[in-house]
Amino acid sequence: MLIEKGLLLSEVVILVAILGPAQVVGQSIMLMFSDKVSMTKPGVFIAAILPIVFTGFSFLPSGFWMLVPFAIAFGAATGTIELRHTILYLRF
Image (cartoon, rainbow, N blue to C red; front, side, top):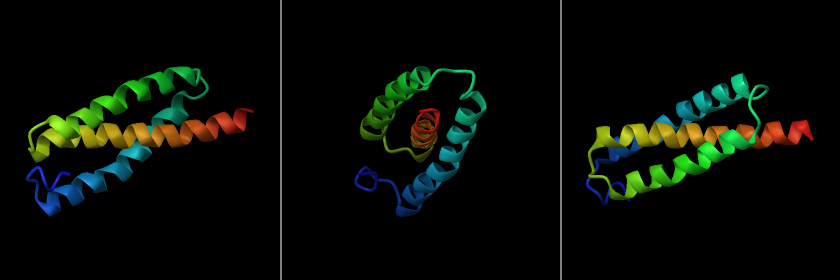
C-alpha cells in the first residue's frame, strides 16, 4: 500500500522498523502505569488511536515524514495491546 502511494522501498522498511521500538515504548509505559490505571482506560485510548492511524496511512499524502508519527503511534498501540492482554491474564 505504501509503495503504491509512491514511497521508496527503503522508506517503507524504515517505517516497519520503527514499529518494534515503538512497541517496546508502549509496553514500558503500560508497565509503569498498570497498577495505577484500570485496564479500561488504555483499551479506550487504543481503540481511539488505531482508526486514526489507519486513516492516516490510507489518506495522507505519501510523505515519509508525515507517516513516521503514525508508525510510532501504531507500534505503541499494538505493544500496549499485547502487554494489556498479559496483565489481564495475570490478574485473573
